[in-house]
Image (tube, rainbow, N blue to C red; front, side, top):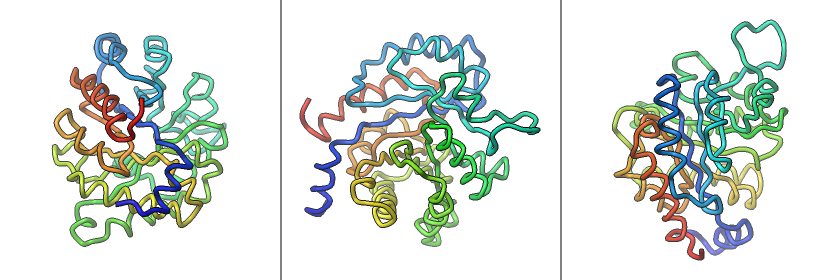
Length: 272
């Protein structure tokens, strides 16, 4: 339960918009993705005063997806180069992404860390580039199953957060996505209580390193086998502000998740 001081800070900051990110990863060709946008995402009944929706296609599909999406839905790149311009074959700089009209970048996703060897230092470099270009970051952090079973969840997350702290010049342009590695694509998910405990700990860390106002305004979202079945119970937790959704964002049920979360905003915060 929030203390009176926490409640006061929330009142100052105002209710945080729900944030739903869709990470399409390296999936599908343009035709089925076009159908997904036109038949599932665009018709979803969502209110931009309640919910912020951002879609992350593969970089090659970004221009077409931006053309098709409703104007109130944002587009993210799934990663970026840790450098600006130079002899970095195959890389895409944040300046190039900005040329596309992209406003968001995923930074530090667990698959980038695990499959492509991105260390905390590389993630910090990428976040610095995103901030320097004026883009928004969805910063991903998470722990392994072994770390959770050993009681090292928060210690692992704190190390990841400490590494990126010097890279942040504007907290207003950062969303933190907590994605337990043991729950990504496995069908397993943290219980609402487990997820909230970690989100509360992350917010406390931010409060201790910055200000209460920054911590209360910060959107902290959950990623890890989010589905139509568990989205409601997760979203109603006080410190869970939304989701970063992988596989489920490529299915028709993604519309249900969007609409359920949009309706839950009033249940969670009251008002209209």
